[in-house]
Amino acid sequence: MIVGVTGGIASGKSTVARAFAALGVPWVDADDVAREVVEPGEPALVEIAARFGQRALLANGSLNRRALREIVFADPSERLWLESVTHPRIRERIIAHLERLQSEGAPYVLLVSPLLFESGQSEMVDRCLVIDVPESLQLARTAARDDVDDTQARAIVAAQMPRAERLARADDVIDNSGNEADLAVQVAELDRRYRRIAAKAPWGTRSQ
Image (cartoon, rainbow, N blue to C red; front, side, top):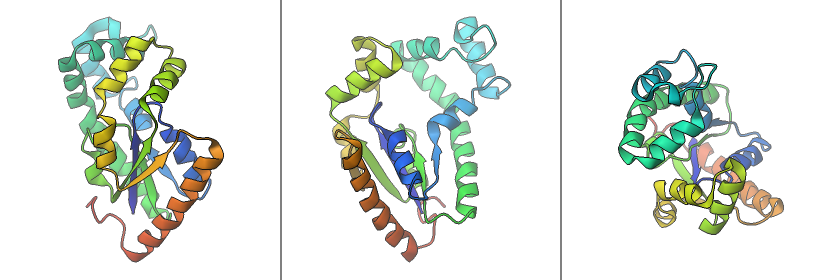
């Protein structure tokens, strides 16, 4: 069974994934895969450099993420172009990683993705788990973590799926506005539920 884990920026998706990992559940992080496909030498980086020029690259030839983020959030059409270049490659590599983890015999696996719904990656999973926090907390965490001002933080949040829509599409929800103890209790409860579900049906019922 594959469980998709998503949530708005700074909702704590990686923290939740690590809590599941402590219980023996492996995960694939779509953000990590997204970084893989734009590393030097990758075709996607070549296309990005051809479109945006040297401003999209650092001196060492790697992607200038901050500059690219500013470009795509200032112009929605550029964001759509970037997604058309990267999303198919990300999807292909995610599938390969998930298949490897499934073959290793875990009770179930996680696909952690901030764009689970927007990118269509929800079609690859059997259940969707949304990590939810109030928008005010999202903004504060984003500004502190990514060293951006309030305007940029709001633009990043606004570019993602609205909170209400994300929650409406969830099979399960974790409230990550509390402390680590609260989170651990919720993860443990879901882990027990997922193990029961996974034991009753073969993996990949939706991802095939």
